[in-house]
Image (cartoon, rainbow, N blue to C red; front, side, top):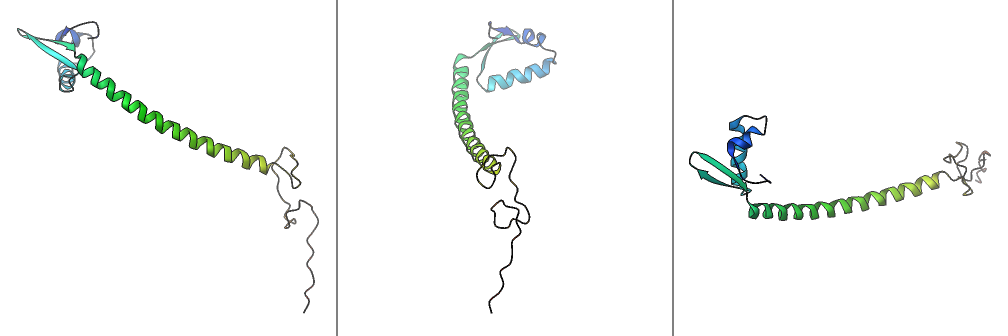
Length: 128
């Protein structure tokens, strides 16, 4: 229809779909005000309706703006999470003195004080 008006039969011949199915689709397009139909004796001739298409374009543009804003907010949120995760990974790869060993730092089980040394913690005697 972009090239010009066509009879319903011509439209149907371009698709591998039954004529009743094409008729139903054309009715949907008519009801949506996207095509206009003229009767020529027994035939119906369909053409695009520029006013209806302009309304469709306006609607699509509003949706495009809505989704663009939503995607921008999602991108910002993802970047924030990735930034925090990147800092956490960078901090986890540093040893006890802040030196980057290239491997995540894991405290030795015996290192309850978090100093990074592997000396055992000695209990202090109780003063009673």
